[in-house]
Amino acid sequence: MKIISWNVNSVRARITNILDYIKQSNPDILLLQEIKTQDIGFPYEDFQNIGYNSYVFGQKSYNGVAIISKQELNNINNSFIKDDLKQSRIITAELRLKNKKIELINIYVPNGNPIDTEKYEYKKEWLKKFISSVKKKIQKNSNMLIAGDFNIIPEEIDVHDFKRYENDALGRLEIRKKYRELINLGFKDVYRFKNKTKQEYTFWDYFAGSWQKNYGMRIDHFLLSNSLIENIKSIDINKKPRSKEKPSDHTPIELEII
Image (cartoon, rainbow, N blue to C red):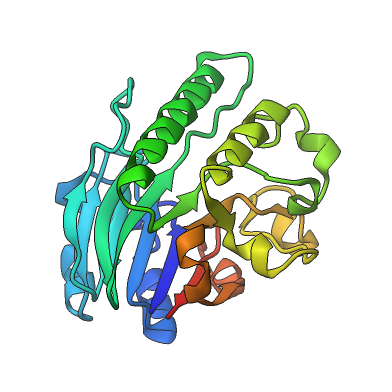
């Protein structure tokens, strides 16, 4: 089963690129973040025409997450945490893999910049609530997959110039500790688990030739519970969509589980 996570930076603005990518990669499930549209404006028919159902938690102009799936999913839920600002940042579902029931969680974590504003406080509180909810959920079902745009640089190797982000909301120590706290509940960062020393990125800014210079960062992640590690077949960062015309500033991560 191929599950892909991708911050598309507006599903309607990138729909041609997204559909082309789906036709080439043929995912079973596509987890989208930052769709930037309300539910009513989501291009359901475009996905339905190529055999996918869409489960959407949208928001006007900002944020928004969706699950696009050929697989039957159950218990779709938009209220995994109580978001103080009522932003559309999490959608969950239950997935069957052979005899296992997997809790599938698609997230778009707040950016948090600038750090001396309420945006940073919101990010910290959001992560605190999310970790608390995961802790409760994993006690009921140890099979869990969390994927999406975490807006967190886990380690120095995960960004082209770590010094530049040491006091940024993406790389600050207390934020990286939150990521570690989440993993310590019983997860593996699948990309780093499979690639101990490889330096690859999932995001390149639109500015200052970041893509051309490979000035990127790895902030999009797949976390898989330890009970599912034996099911990993492969994980890849597919850079091709980032090189397309009018691309998202993120590129897809592709997980295959068996």
